Image (tube, rainbow, N blue to C red; front, side, top):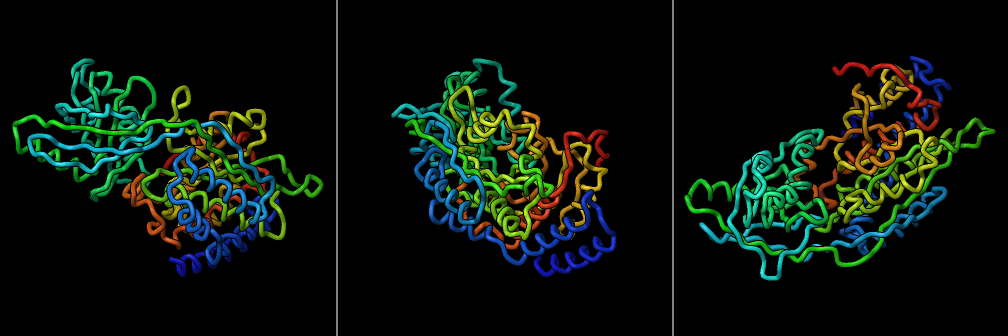
Length: 483
């Protein structure tokens, strides 16, 4: 991959130089973006960062001592890399603890299942919960049941998650985990088990957040092979399936999480800069507690910080400020009223008066697969800025997707809701949900060359945007038709 990219990069460099200026300023910004791209492919700190993060701190459950220590380390790294205005911004958090989880089949064929508690789920009584399983092939079948129809039963949903490059299979099945326990409880169920939202056939289960608060029941995810085992039991026996559930999960203490913030400030106004205009990038520092959070989201925080470090090392500063945020508490839901994205909500709420100065926002939170496409805000398709970006990113295998970006990732949501434009550098997530939220989310799952490609795309794109005067809010007109 590295040799191919180098050859493509050389040819694109010649093409862009021959074409002349494509940005409002001059061809200099484009050449510098190409230099950043090529430098990132040769040498950047992303792998070093994710290696140290996952090795030193392991799992980083929101509000845990490990997450808090990793934030202090992150701030020290930001200072070491020369970033400006480094800070740790704390906010209160309820600490959820996984405890123990067990699910076993009592009949017709007694055996244990491989399960994990869903994040934010409550404990069972000390003696556990025993009941007949109401088994549904699809989530819609559960939703079709009338209220009261599952009284005293354990609801089980076996629906598979479809593998897709853009993760849309997970988007379709995530309500099974997020809202399923609540919907089961509405129908009288006393417990809930779903097939893990994974796209593999290995015997380990995926965790993930579910709805928190009254009106839910103890909830578990089982491994895909165990879901298939249940299917076979139903086929082989006329007897009902009976299960026993046990969990000691729950919110155990008041704690705090935090966002780690650093910047490369734009050059001064007297030098033609606009340092008060801010581009926000980042990823989330917390992780689930089964693996070490390498792909979710150690890779993302490393990619964005490494890209900004390359920009920090440039001979001149960009026109605008680029701010990197390592958001805290993306994963674990919180008690009402705010269910999730505690760090992202805190960032947006504490800067409500600054949103007009936010130029754009995006995050890297989809693993470490190579970037294959870019989405820009509505109206940006037919612009010199887009053409310059395409010339620089195409050699990396990154194509322009004319569909307008409506968000930049989960942690960008609260800021986007306040009117800030988003862009997306879309990663190949075909195998992302093989390991997402599992014990197999470890450093060994990261391909260093793919990581380098991510850093190259982020660094080059950010330079083009930060050294321009493009105003996404001012762009008008219909989006280009999809190809």
